[in-house]
Structures are given as structure tokens and as C-alpha cells.
Image 1 (cartoon, rainbow, N blue to C red):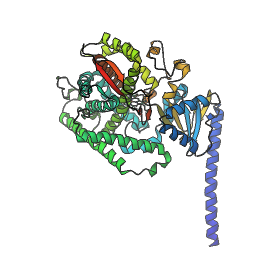
Image 2: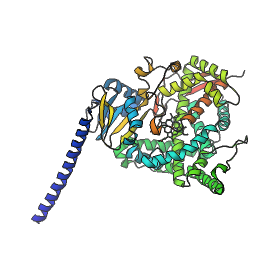
Image 3: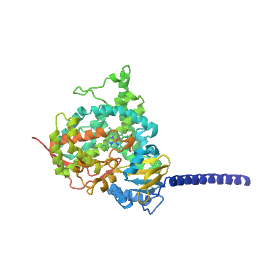
Image 4: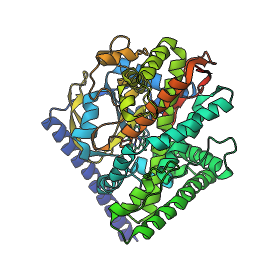
Amino acid sequence: MAFSLILVGALAAAYCFYHVSCVLLLWRRRWQMARHHGCKPPRKLPQIDPFLGTDVVLQNLGAAKKYGFLDLLKKRHEANGLTFTTNTYLRTTINTCDPDVIRSVLALQFHDFGMGPLRRNSASPLLGKGIFTTDGDIWAHQRGLIRPAFAKLQFNEFPLLAMHTDEFLGVIKRHNYELDLQQLFFRSVLDSNTLYLFGESIGLMHDNATESATTLHHALDYAQQGTILRLRLGNLMFAHRDKKFSESCKTVHAYAQKFVDQALEFRRKNAHLPVEKWEHPRNPNGIQTYIFLQELAKETDDPILLRDQVVNMILAARDTTAGLLSFTVFMLARFPDVWAKTRADVLENYCEPLTYDALNSMTYLRYVIQEILRLFPPIATNSRMANKDTVIPVGGGPDGKSPLFVAKNHVVTYSTFVMHRRKEFFGEDADEFRPERWETLRTSWEFLPFNGGPRICPGQKFALAEATYTIARMAKAFKEIVSLDDTDWREQLTLSLTLNNGVHCRLVPDDS
Ligand code: HEM
């Protein structure tokens, strides 16, 4: 008995000794690596609770409740520099709005950082193994899969967009020109996305939208909220038990599956022909339309992979584009002189049907869109996790100019919202809405609405075309946008940034 106790004690001591030695060795190796590269510790956000960071978490929650999380972040950077760390729930986060740090993480040292297990585990019930949740070779394969489909879309989007926008303008008329345009943009963007992705619009804009369309709309919202909650719970994610969340994910998957089956049928029917000869459907004007999912089905017949890609794409495109359009109209309604200039620019270059070339000549409209993306970037904060110990050349030391050691599993969070409002880059009036600044402004990594590096948004061209096309058609159809709400914008920050107070306005048709 005594011998057994001694044996157990010795084993426990050896086990503890082994682990303590490992931690000390790891600590020494990291210390040597940091010293070798001349790293200096970054600034720290003053915290009352330095380990769990409960004070920081409570401050974040309080600010979010008052629609002011991004403002809090901006103030923290003003007080603590471009790069500083926070410790919450035993996890160290490096917070930055320094373009040099961001460029290192997203591009120069792309292979040292990834989405990491946190994002993967929180989002996988909805997004599966889609492009947003994967890293390394699996991600590279997914990115390769969607590339040809995007290339096709870019040459063929206007006939569909024209039909879709006619319908959008029709809905405004049916509402007697008075409505919350943000609500309509959410529906409209989901309609146009499903049209491009599946070849069939979900039909949410119709007054009598089908039950399955409305169910999908709500399921997407609920599943997205649950995903964000899981992300925020971080290490406590296992506590998330919500039947409605699982059901919502299932509803979204079932909806996508129906179209995946159609795309696979398309693949089977054409299998005897070389891919260039596969017969695509034609739209009511007789124009051959490229459906994203069919393009994807040329590359793979894996139904789960196809489904995951489609769900990822719907989510990537919906709130971002709807947010961009909503903020644009919100600001145009509040700046009648900017609206007048935008309109003049659109009308001068307008042609029927509206073409890419015509849109490209609308320079002032482009400045307006850039200015909205600067002030209200749809992805206002983002993050990456280090997948190994690494050193980035800036971010360390009190001035943030020394090399910075980043340990494996530490998170780098970056805020485009804060960076896009830095006076050094955008001038003393950086907080103001002034599209004219783009006449002379040349930007690099300090303006990053679509991300940078290998994971840059593949839908950028498509989103900008959809947004400029929609605003140009609105400028042609309406001579005035009257705001029906005199409050300032209120932040609604989920996966992307939108307006908590919506965009309530009256549009005055141009009957001339
Ligand atoms: C104004 C509209 C949009 C903005 C501001 C935007 C912005 C972004 C940003 C910042 C990312 C990087 C996310 C990250 O790495 O964590 C991203 C990724 C992505 N976006 Fe967009 N996006 C927009 C519209 C679209 C559209 C319309 C589509 C598709 C039709 C799309 C498809 C994607 C995809 C697939 C990714 C993942 C890329 C990857 O990880 O390799 N986006 N987008």
C-alpha cells in the first residue's frame, strides 16, 4: 500500500516536473527568439483584471449596448497607440490599426496566420468547411474552385442586374416612395445573390414572398446571430446549446441543397460533352446566363463541398453589400449637395442599357462609394490567429515601431473602421463625409474595405458593380431623397456593419 502511494506520488511529481520543464523551455525559446529579432513588448491596455479581463469585456458589452463599440475602439487607440494588447479569458489579443502590422499579417507573413480553431468551431455549424472557415491547403483548394466561376460572373452580370433593379424600383413605387430602404436592400441583395448563385431569385422583394423565402431569410439571420454569439463566447463556446440555432442552420442547408441537386443534374446531363460546350440556360432576353453554382459544378461533384461554398457565398455577399448600399443612401439623404453632384455625374454619363463603361465614367459616384467604404467599412473589425510563434517587423515598443513577437494561438484583431479614420492618412477632416477627398487621395494598405493579400475579397468587383449600378439607377429615377429620420447613425455590428436605425426616407420620382 505504502509502495503504491510512493509510486503514484513519484509519477505525479514526474508528470508535473515534465510539464513545468516544457513550459519553461517554451518560455526560454520564445524569449530567445524575441531577443534575437530585437522585439519589444507592445503597449498594454490598462486593465483592472489583468488575467480574465472582465473589466474590458464589460466595457465592450456596455459600449455595444449603446451602439458605440467602434467608437470605444477608436478612443482606445487614440489613448493607447496604434498597437496594444488586451488579455481576456486567459487569451492575449493584439489590437491594431497600423497598416504595416496588418500587411504583415495578411500578406507578407500570410502562412504564419490563419482563421484558427476559434473561427472554425464557431462558424462550422452554419458554414461547414467553406472558404471562410478553412486554412492552408483546404482553403487554397476552395479558392481555386470559385475563381473560374467569379471570372464568368464579371462579364455577364448586367442583364440580370437590370431585371432585378427594375423590380427593386417597382417595390419603392408600390410603397408610395416612403420606406426603410435598408430593409429593402437586405431583401434585394439576397434576391440578386440567389439569382446569380442558383439561377433563381428567392423572391423576397415580392409583396407575397413565399413562405420558404421568408423562412430562409429569418433562418439566415438567426444562424448568423448564433454564429456571432459562439465567436464571442470563445473558449466557453461549448456552453452554447440552442435548438433554434441548429434548426436554422438545417433550414439554410436544405435550401441550398435543392439547388446543389439541380446543379449536379446539370453536370450529369452535360457530362458527355467537353466543358466549353455545356449548355447554359438563357434569360428571358435570350442571353446565356452563367450561374455560379453550375460553374462550380464543373469543378467538383462533391455535394457537401458545393453546399458549403454556396452558403458561405450567400453570407459573404448579403450583409456587406446591403450595408454599403444602406450607408450610401443614408448619407446621400443627409447631404443634398453631394446627392445633387452624384446625380449630375450619373445623368451626364447615363445610357440605356447601362453598361460597365458608362458606370466607369461616373467618377464622382465612385468617390461617393469609396468614401462610404472608408467611413463605414462593412467588415469593420477582423482578426487572424497565429498558427506558430512568429515575429512581425512592427507593432512592438511604446511607439509601436519595433519588431513584435507573436506567440502561437495569439489573436491579432485589426479595425478598418479605426484605421480609415486616421488623420495622418485621410486629413484633419477624416471623420467627415467628403467624397471630393478622393480626387487626390492615393491609398495603399491604410484603405482596406475588401481586405488584402491572398484572401482579398473575390467578390469585390461584383459588389462594386452591384452597388454603383443600383445607385446610378436610383439617381436616374429620383430627383430627391428626403430623410424621414433626423437622428445620427446608430451602429449595428454583427458579422458586418449596418444601421441599427435603418434608412427611413422618401424618394421623389423624376417625372421629366
Ligand atoms: C461591399 C461588399 C463587400 C465587402 C466590403 C466585402 C469585404 C470582404 C472582406 C473584408 C473579406 C475578408 C474576410 C476575412 O478574411 O476575414 C471578404 C472575403 C470574402 N468575400 Fe467579400 N465583401 C463584399 C462583397 C462580397 C460579395 C458580393 C461576394 C460574393 C459574391 C463576396 C465573397 C467573399 C468571399 C468568398 C470571401 C472569402 C475569401 C477568402 O477567404 O479567400 N464578398 N470580403
